[in-house]
Image (tube, rainbow, N blue to C red; front, side, top):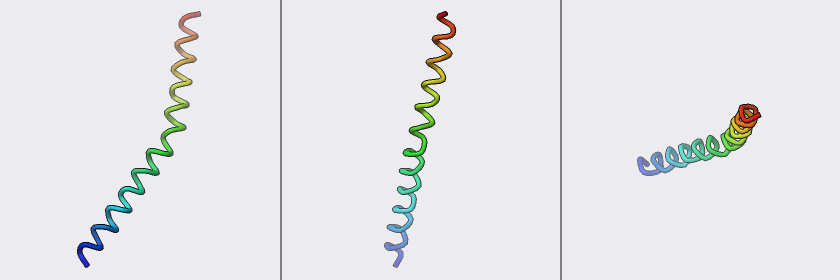
Length: 44
């Protein structure tokens, strides 16, 4: 029974980590675009 609880805990933990990584992809992309636009504004 204890082994089953560890497997459930690990699967839940891995799911949370995967969802966090997948949801942050769009945020990182948006931040990259913001930084790029600031760099272009400084160059002009």
